[in-house]
Image 1 (tube, rainbow, N blue to C red):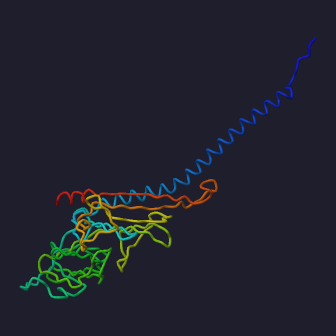
Image 2 (image 1 turned 30 degrees about the vertical axis):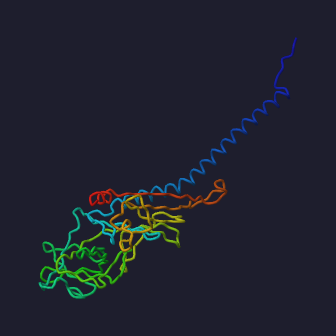
Image 3 (image 1 turned 90 degrees about the horizontal axis):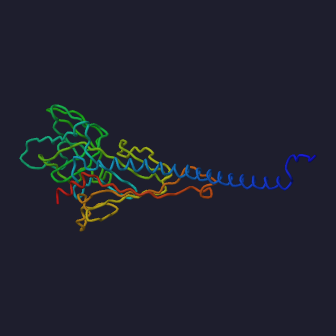
Length: 308
């Protein structure tokens, strides 16, 4: 009678163990690669997420450039100055911000003397239907014929005979645009004031943060909030008709194609860095990525097409 064999031979056991080790090694290697890939994706996604948020914010704000306000050669609705971008528009809440005309004292001369109608840092305007909506802390466009000034209003108070007095900071420039009166004479007719909305983007070098502001402090400095961290670089430039680009606009030089009313869009570049690092990703170093945005507001394109 033949005895029945039980168990495995040493050869069979060795073969089984070898196959098992090969399978386990392959599975382990695949799992490690998958885990490292996911860790890398997680690290990279953090900076991409910041970039998407920045891009959406820029596109939304830049699209409002010049709403209800046509640019002039020396006063554009978009301003680019190094690492700072500013966008101006007329607010609607829900109606367009009203335009107020200057108080006319009835003198036969077309212009007020130096000092205006109440002082070098204040102007009296007429109320509309007995009211006014301007207030301290507002930015406003002062229009004197074809001349413009960007004013920061410190206070706005009611005056006698249907008037109100707008007081403003004695600044020469504000957001890269002329401010104050300097030697400009106010006309008794054709001088108006209107509230403006301003949005400002810039890079804070100390914290390497990208900032956004739509409000200002008592010194007319933007009150910024952090839009994105890890901003290693931030540059802005202006897009003009004729497929031209420049760091800023200028209506005072000999070039007639880089004026404020030639602007059709903005170009923004930012280099963002991941906040966290992973030893398994990029040798444990932060990931740096450049992002590029070009925004051409429809109303600026319409403005150019209409005036050509």
